[in-house]
Length: 89
Image 1 (cartoon, helix red, strand yellow):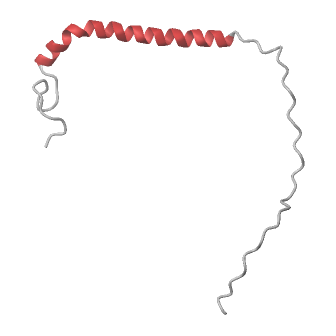
Image 2 (image 1 turned 90 degrees about the horizontal axis):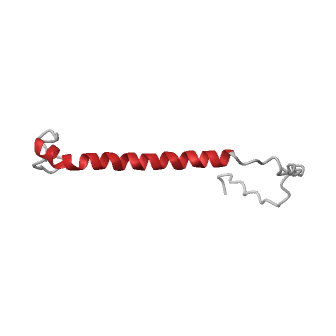
Image 3 (image 1 turned 30 degrees about the vertical axis):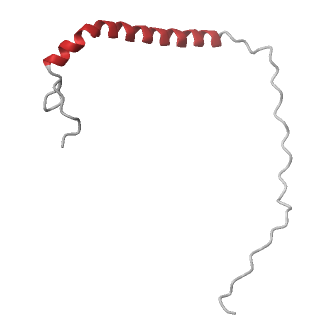
């Protein structure tokens, strides 16, 4: 049983036939321009964002000192130890 159902647009080794190439040909140029438009848009948004963020000046923002950490104190809660099992009763 083949993995992909048999189609008239593909050969038995799943290569495109001439009919599929002819059917896709009218859309080739439109798809290329659409892809280029999307890629151009994404790159321009990325470049604009990097440029806008690079202009931020944080020199007037005061960074507070790190809070002092209290000294480590051991756990003071009461823990009940499990009774020892000796194996004999």
